[in-house]
Image (cartoon, rainbow, N blue to C red; front, side, top):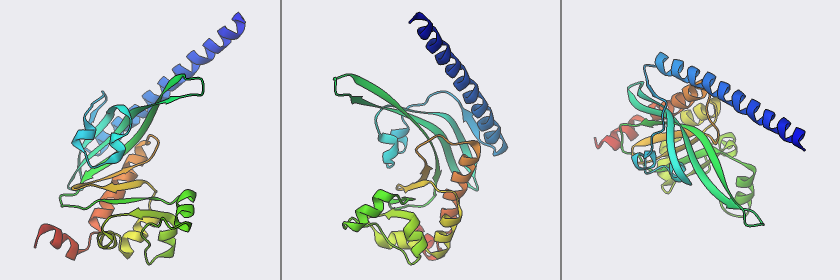
Length: 225
């Protein structure tokens, strides 16, 4: 019994050391990426991102929420904030034992410089197809491939069609997939896991690419011209 305990303890320590080494390697790559893009880097935990970006539901999940590995600056003329995020949830098993689960993901937020309306875009899942079959439909588009691969929601369908026109649909089909949300001024791209440095790059280019493809008539309308 003692031998088993020692073996388990050694394995636990080895995994912790390995995890620390991997985290340090990833952090070094993020610092290098941030520097190469002219972004600042903050390693320590910063709370209040849920209040700073109140329109994004993902940043309001659970408790003990904080951002870290925060990179900020300018991306093609637009303010960018890229970061890792943590939150906790609690669950209870059949015996009444409570367990705290830690959730980690990464995201990139870009300020549009324009007044926006809420819009939600993510890769479509099998459950979405079941929901569509029973009548809970999302917004469909002229591209059958796009409608098959993406789940899109907005209270204003006209807004969704203005933003996601043919060129933007093809752009989204060609780019790596993320969940995308619009609030009143920002666009966020995230996944349910942490990013590599090139994921931050792809997420920033994706969000910026969507904004750059806003039609001229839409930009003029949003600016009040």
